[in-house]
Image (cartoon, rainbow, N blue to C red; front, side):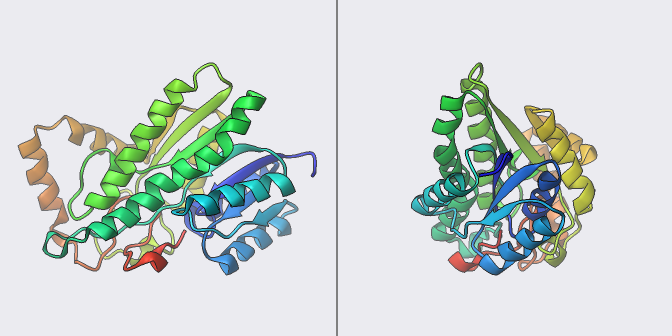
Length: 277
């Protein structure tokens, strides 16, 4: 083991996870990279090593608790104790009332919410024992309120935000901090498949820099970009009939095949292989 800090990132094979891995490695972290796509993880690890950083890959399915636990165990054995967890893995799927599928909803929640819980479970005891650590939960502005055709995704991200906000309160005074990050639309290969309008779309680089700054400052939360965050906060204050009318109007340009809510996520999850990050 080297003389470095260790960061474990789920959903590290592309998008925000990839960007964070490369950027945090520049800050001196040895990065443990977790996702299902081993070949993509190898590519990210290669980019980290090219800039002189340290990276190791741990292919796993975050919806499977035993796989996440084993991935973290191997990371700590090879790189050292995890001081920073970035729970970033996530997927999206359009939830259509005319073709409702509870199994599809369950898969989204298992990956987006429970995947983050499983990763937290794997690192938390060690952080508490050492009296230091940071957990970063990458949620979404889509968790602020229910969005059209996004019931599964909005529920998973709303649950994620509330879970980690509660955990942050419970961890006060322990030396373990929690940062909840709620991105809007971020320009990645995944959101490039969206065919609906994506207001305040951000490039990946500036989005990653905002997140790294929040991590460094150990901020309690970050929602970005600020114009979209302001819209989302305002929407929460609207009377529900007004919100329902407005949300349904905004959604009129979306096709059934288009990816939906804010965040760095693929547009569809046809089966368990749809997990991309």
